[in-house]
Length: 170
Picture 1: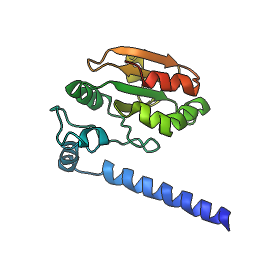
Picture 2: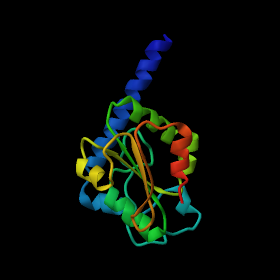
Picture 3: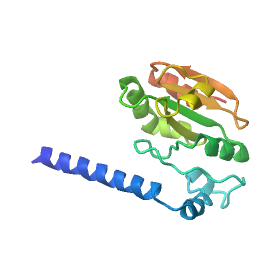
Picture 4: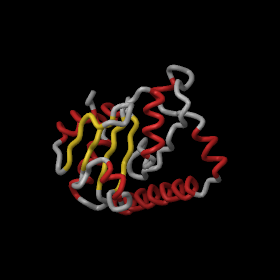
């Protein structure tokens, strides 16, 4: 019985995620721009209003809540708000990349990256962006300062301690 409930729960999560992705991708430009006018993340709620003029990138990475695939939007928002940008480059289905996803989605990974813009890219879908960041091997983490220059990076299999130290790069 528990196995059946687990399958139903998994299917429900998959259908819900697919529906959310479908709705977001099917939004008109006007709706997307309206959503981007607001930054809903915790770090800016305390201040009451956004400090920068760049629109907040929309979190759209299905298996990584709070992460976006919009590198340009994230770096513009980071520059306008004096924040770093953490770029995670992975290869879908690769076990070493999936291990890093688990770390980044975990409590410590979330806490360490909360003050940065977070971008996740699939190297197969965005090879030119990955190459522009100097990434040739996955998984990779590149931390950009607010001006968009790399301040820390690592490619290849990573231990949890290394991932967390990269997220805290200054």
